[in-house]
Amino acid sequence: MDITTTYLGLKLKSPIVPSAGPLSEKISNIREMEDAGAGAVVLYSIFEEQIEHEQLELHHHTSAYSESYAEATSYLPEPFDFKTGPDEYLNHIRKAKEAVDIPIIASLNGKSIGGWTDYAKKMEQAGADALELNIYLLPTDAKKSGSEIEKTYVDIVKAVKSTVKIPFAVKMHPFFSSTSNMAAELSNAGASGLVMFNRFYQPDIDLETLDVVPNVILSTPMAMRLPLRWIAMMYGKVNADLAATSGIYTAEDVLKMVMAGAKVTQMLSSLLKFGIGHIADVTTNLKSWMEEKEYESIEQMRGSMSYMNVDDPAKFERANYMKVLHSYK
Image 1 (cartoon, rainbow, N blue to C red):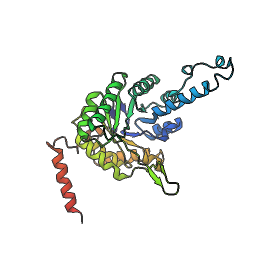
Image 2: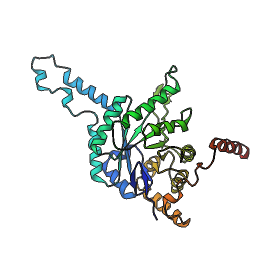
Image 3: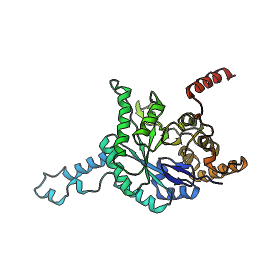
Image 4: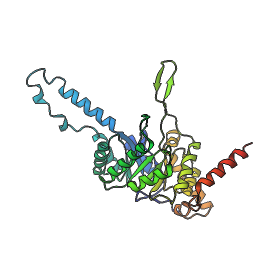
């Protein structure tokens, strides 16, 4: 039973990949993920704001009392002599690479072109097998057009492509005016893969404190329907590997995504809920289903339920939409 796959040019023993999140902060967890059968691991994201904050704090502590007495600054190196910013994350990449044999995919969330390229290069140098660009731009400026926002995404991809040699995927959201066109643009700009989809975590209001508070809710199995549709429509239409994320809990979910056209299926909520050992359970059920249905490999089923042979997927979707509305009792 062959469940191997390829993603971003990397050979993976399984299409099940833990996605970026807190579980990968511990090397012991990454080892457990490999032992459970994960094909690769996407590390937790590092944010450009975190790096800037560390650098500003260091500058404050090394300069706050520089005028207190004449010789004070002579005992302190310049801020750029310190190992600040992403060093802890870069060391984590190195340790992860030493600890396991499966590919390690570093995740970066930047906000400036310089930040994306600088840290992407450092991650490559630290030994990351690939990168995942977690582009989280929330357009709150009503004067900025959709085309300007989209150009920012494309410019980031082009900049990273010109900086690193390792492959990278873009974790995109589904809220573009034309998701299919944006997928093609990102692929043409140099992205080797597209992760569908990024979740924009929504804030909440605390009625007792009258404060806006963060509120993380784990994805539910229903969340997989959105990436399932778009992966099915994009399969064979963009020159990039497709990765599914959001709401993937079971072997059946993995099978559906692969049949839609996904190269890998990323899991986080299910692992947070059931533990890292859940990967082994899903893998066992995946192989059992394939044996029962007489599939010899993952590759045999990939894209078998995609829309690539339909001339106009939009018509199919509208027809399906009408059918659903009229069929509910």
